[in-house]
Image (cartoon, rainbow, N blue to C red; front, side, top):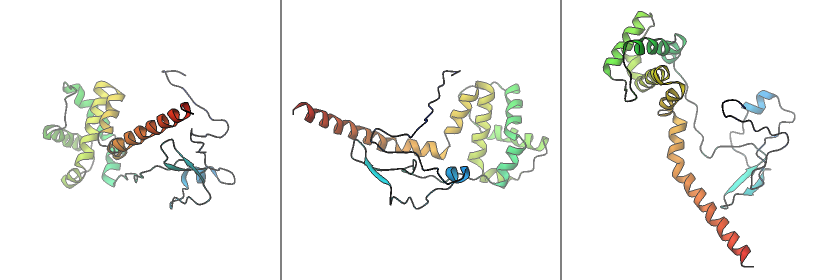
Length: 198
């Protein structure tokens, strides 16, 4: 497809190398229920049991359930207000027109003061308490939008990722994932050497 992208379309059932069916049963359920109703208790009864190459137990037939669940971050009223008024977008446009931005840019007190002035000029209501309570979120959004404007969408997304709870948890879990991969390699190597010596 365009832009060096591709599409993998499964037209039947999707099985992992361990033989686990990762497709949930969608018969007799609405589209909404299929996508949004989940087994909150992670009930494994009546699910097919499979083992990965490293011997880890996984369950088939119920879709893919993450090993670690992270609750979605809910925005508050102040955050919604800023987003509805395009506060970050408008500020970034003005800021990049009047300042030379480099990739070492950080949101300091001077930038926050400029942001306050922008909110006042656009008549967007805020309090100092709002800014203090949402400090990290505000700084991240200012920097992200400025990077989008100055360096492109990809650079802005990188900034967003720096404070994304799911990304941060994923990075935290990388050593465990690496250990699982190393364990799988050892098990496969042992299996292959046993097969060759028979």
